[in-house]
Length: 349
Ligand SMILES: Cc1cc2nc3c(=O)[nH]c(=O)nc-3n(C[C@H](O)[C@H](O)[C@H](O)COP(=O)(O)OP(=O)(O)OC[C@H]3O[C@@H](n4cnc5c(N)ncnc54)[C@H](O)[C@@H]3O)c2cc1C
Image (cartoon, rainbow, N blue to C red; front, side):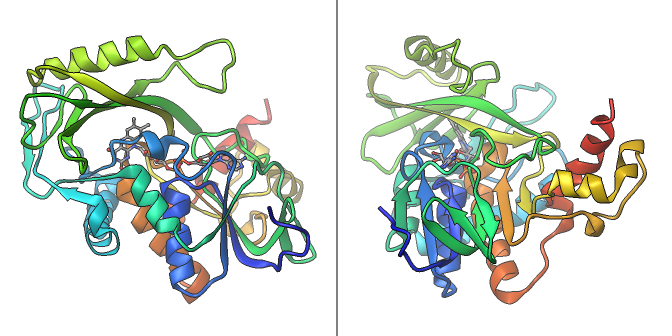
C-alpha cells in the first residue's frame, strides 16, 4: 500500500480498464512517472468483459465514422506492434440487423485478448488497488488517498462519478460474454445478433453482446441472471451459426459506458459551481466560450467510448500523451465540456 511518504507522481490514473492501461502505457513510455489505481483490479470493469474486436464503424457517415476510421488504423498498428501476442488477426463478417444494409466482409478484422492486453500494458507500472472517492487538488498536487500527482486522469468507465460533474452524460449498457468450446468450426469473426469469434485460446470460441440497457450493478434492487443471459446469447448465436456440442467455460459481465452523442470524451472537466458563479447568465442560455469556463486544474477524463473502447483507446491515449508531454491541444470537439452549457441552462428549472 502507498504511504504518505510515497514520492509524488507525474500522473495518477484512476481506473485500470483499457483506457487507463493504454494511457499509463503511453505516458510511461514518454518518460512520465505514472501510477495506476483501481478499486477492484486490472480489467475488472467493462474491459474485462469485452469481446474486444478491432473494427471500424460500419455504415453511417459523419464525424464519429471519420474519427473511428483513424482510430481503427491506429489501433491495428498499435496492438499488432506493442501487443502482438495478444491480438488475433481474422476476417470479420458484419451483418446488420437492418435488412436495408448489405453485409460487410472486412479482411482485416481482429480480436484482442482483453484482460491479457490490459495486464501487458500495465506491466512495470506502479499499481495500487484503491477505491478513490472525492480526489482533491491542493498545494499544486492532486491527492488520491496517500498518493499525490501533478496531473490526474480519470478513466472510470460507467462507474459512479467521483467528482460533481452531473453535466457529463454517460449511459451504462450491460454486457455478457461467454467462452465456450464447440465441435463446429468458427472460421472468422461474426457480428450479427451477437458476436461469435475464435479467440487466441486454442479451441475456445467467444460469444458476447452488450444489449441490456435496464440492468446496472449499481442498482441494488436487481441482480443479473447469468443463466438467462447465457441462454439468450446461445439462442441469438444459433440464428447466425449452428454450433454443436457446446460446453460453457466461463462468463464475463460488465458495463460499457456510452456518451449521449456517441462521440468519445477526452478532455478537461468543468468545475460547475465556479463556472456558474462566474457566468450566472449561462442559465438563461447565453453563449459563453468554453475557454471562459473554469476547469479542474490538471485533470483529464477519458470516457464514453461505447462499444468501441478497444478501438479508441490507443487513439485517445496517444492524444493524451501529446497533450501532456508535447503540449499539443486536445480536440475541443470531443471535450466533455460540450455538454456543460445545455446542462447549466436546464439547471435553471
Ligand atoms: C460484453 C462487452 C463487449 C464489448 N465488446 C467490445 C468490442 O468488441 N470492441 C470494443 O472496442 N469495445 C467493446 N466493448 C466496450 C469496451 O469494453 C469499453 O468501451 C471499454 O472497456 C471501456 O473501458 P474503460 O477503461 O473506459 O472502462 P472500464 O473497463 O469499465 O474500466 C473502469 C475501471 O475503473 C475502476 N473504477 C471505477 N471507479 C473507481 C474508483 N472510484 N476508484 C478506483 N477505481 C475505480 C473500475 O474498477 C474499472 O476497472 C465491449 C463491452 C462489453 C461490456
